[in-house]
Image (cartoon, rainbow over all chains, first blue to last red; front, side, top):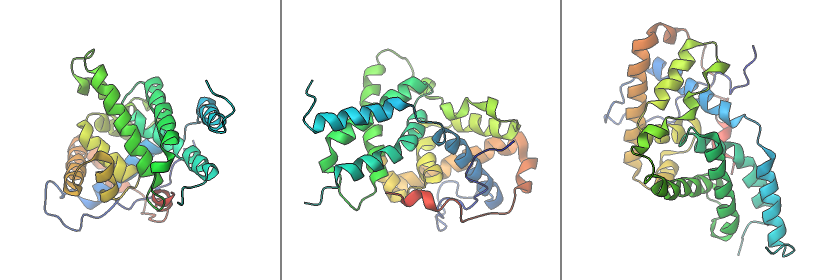
Length: 71
Length: 187
């Protein structure tokens, strides 16, 4: 099973620098694990193949702008 | 005027599409609708190319457009759907078939169960790698609001997951801080 993910990158996104505010007290190991899982879940979607309709759309936009195709 | 050349603009736009799709999917579990949203975003971005300020985060700019597009659509949709929050169960949470790990399934479910504003803040900062400031700009709110949403999201996820599978968390492999750096600054 190879899963194409980010790899086990682990640093929590940004440190809050100890704002004592709402619930910053998640255990660091758990937070690291959460961060990794979050990126994995998100990256799965990012890694999906981009349907050609998007590139087609951009090509159309480009053509229009070039003044060729006025619809 | 240093408007970026259309070619550069297009190149950056193309590079951002997978991220726009992922972000859109966090708003709606309807993949087709998410893609419509991305297409709308591309058109809007293209048409307002000149309003992008060079040197600022291009992806953040695009995310802002997508978010605005979503919420203006959403206002129309609200008339048809009772509780908008019900339909926002995030599609990041409904693809468990790819995972043998129960804990990842749990994670996706937990993520989908977060309040939308918290999930959004967490994804922007934790998954996309935006700074708190950029995330605040995208969401049109204060930096402190983003921080507190992210904190609450983390706490909530931790609570949910700790209850359902605490034993897993001690066994994570050693950190590799290098890997996730590159993504946030590609604009």
